Length: 430
Image (cartoon, rainbow, N blue to C red; front, top):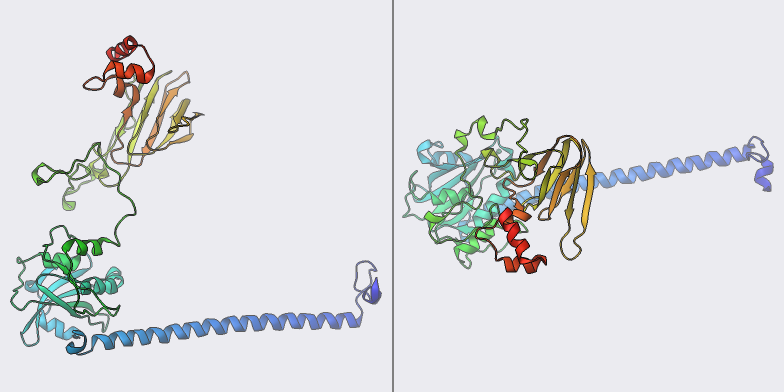
């Protein structure tokens, strides 16, 4: 039991704590309080120190950047202009000096240094947050790229919230609204497809966004440098069965087979389909009907990567074995009872199946053979969602036995381990 038990304060004896025990408890509480206060104080001190350090470090960085931009042209080839000087040089940002405009910027022609230097001034809109976010990235990109009529980036004023990027042009080059629109395209870097092969990259020696003389590369390297931060880690999926490369543009189509309508001409009907509530005609050999709502039914689906299908089944009707070459599928049963499943790839060929009732959802992975059959006594309805605007469909039986021209029956007989007459009978049926 010990002295502490005899003194009280334990459950075993049921005695109240003695004065000595009370004093010890009070001392412990004060120690805990003191430790908590010291811990909180230390945490607060570290937080304040980090905040102050970040504030001063930011100011020093901004000051260093400003100093670098204000070096003389003989040192780094940079120049600083004020907002007022740019306004005067562009004629008060007059429309006659406007080379082009983007979603959050405008590019003007300007004349500085007493009319000796023609520059392009890219002004980022103050009210657009995207303009502020892209400022540093814009400086970096444009300081690394040189157009055939673009000598170098000379500066970027950053006073009073005004942000612009100034680029020197060849003195012999006269900028007009109609002339050499490739330069505004380069400044916006929105459409690089038509840029001249004369574009060169100039390597930057550090991250100060000032341009240095360097090695020139081919236009392909320039395009790769601009596209690197937009590139995907994998090839995009095709949206048609074949996409053969051609050298003659008049024989070519877009990779997804669709042209884009002028956004100013789009209407609500471009995004509308009516009639999905109407049952399909199931009076056919398989007893089902698939109403696929893809980009051909709703033009507004173009580039959105999705489509929809309504599938109607009569009793014992089936959506025969098939696969989607370009899409996975999510099937939800609206009415009836369906037996569904898919088969895994070689070598297992596992059948993964399930009986679905109203409200059940089942997924068919892309490229795997799957199908459904109505095992109920009434009609069934299902909706399929697909993650492609043109998912495609390859029905196994009809593709093999109704190909055009027909497949050699000897080949099919050996492949399916059937008598040749059976194959010929099946080809005649389809």
